[in-house]
Image 1: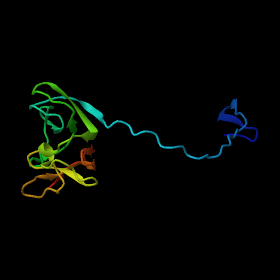
Image 2: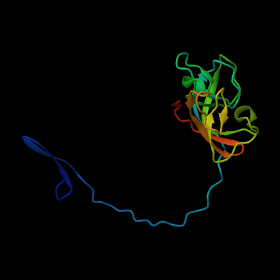
Image 3: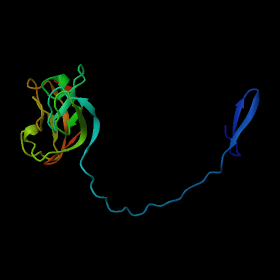
Image 4: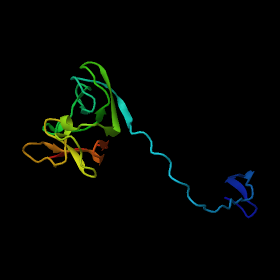
Length: 170
């Protein structure tokens, strides 16, 4: 309990002990000024999710999942529900049996044809995991897909912000 003299008192029967005196309260008075100009845009990059062994050969930009049984990376695929849990993307090529770094965040690719079926992304649209791997701006439907999973959102014609969601089983 705190008494009127700013002293903390601990009461434990059968005795009373004074623990400490509190310093008088202080206040810092400040006022808001004018906000300065925005800083320069940082480099595109992603957060490192982890380093995992690849079960198959991977190419930079591949959207990957981690197999629950083998604990190895594979190419994420909307056709198989257990393979639609997107972990992120690989930043560089990796042979099967070697460790690959998996990232989320900004992925910039000059030509998206291999992953999206078109050279450029449509900014502002969400991109979904595609049956057979890769991404699409069209929401997958059954029976072609077993799951719908958002991989990320296009922030420019050449950049995708990868922020995977949990898949919804169809």
